[in-house]
Image (cartoon, rainbow, N blue to C red):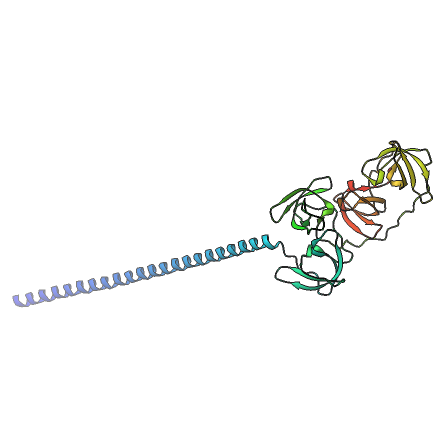
Length: 335
C-alpha cells in the first residue's frame, strides 16, 4: 500500500510538472508571436518613413529644378528682351521701322515668324529684307501709339548722345516727368532721365471704333484789325502780346506782336482776347491743336473721345490717331 501511494504521488508530481512545462511553452509561443508583431510594426514604420523621406527629397529636387529653370529663363529674357505673342500672320501688310531707326516707318509684308525669339522677317516693298524685327517695331494699318505712357511699359528709345539715324534701344519706361519727357532704363543698364515722347516707341495698338464726328466749320471772323490780343507765336507754348494786323479770307489773321515780330496766317485758336480762358472741360468734337507724342510741334485735329483717366483721343487732320493724350498737350479755342 505504501508503495502504491508513493507511485501515485510521483505520477501526480509528473503531471504537475508536465502541466507547468506546457504552460511555459504556451507563454513562450505567445511572447514569440507578440515579438513578431512588434517587429513587423517596426519594419512597416521604417518603410513608411523611408517612403516619406524619398517623396520629400523628390519634391525638393523638383522645386530646385523648377527654380533653376525659372532663373535660366529670367537670365535669357534679360538678354533677348520679352517675347511678344505671335499676332501677325505671314503675308500681313505692315509698316516697320527699318533697323530701328527714328521715324523710318517703311511699308512691307510679314515674311516669316521666328518662334525662338519672337521676332519677324519683314519683306519691304522697296526690296529690302530684314530679319529679327521686334514686334514693337511693327505696326499694321490703322494702328497708333498711345500718347501717355504708363510706368513699366516696354519700349524702344533713343539714347542720349547717339547719332541721328542710330537704332533705338530696348528698355522700360520708369517714370513720366510731367513735362512731356520720360525716364527710361535701358536693358543694358543705362538710364536716361528726360527722353522726349517722340523719341520713345511703344507697341502700337488699334484704336477702338469711333462714331462719325461732326466737325464744326470755322465761324466768321470775330476779331477786327487793331484788336489787342495775345497769340502763340509759331504755335509755341506761350502767348505773346500783339494786335490784329489783318483779317484773312481763310479765317486766319496776321499779327503784329508788341516786340516787333510779324506773323501771318495765325489760326484763331492760337489767339485769345483779354479775359479769355480755356473752356472748363474738353469734349469730343472740339477742334484743337495737339502736341503729337508729347513733342513741341502742334498738329491740327479734333478731340474724338474723352477718357475716364482724364486723357483724350485725338484724330489728326493728316489721318493719324493718337490715344491717351494728356490735356496739357491739347490747345483749343479760349473763350
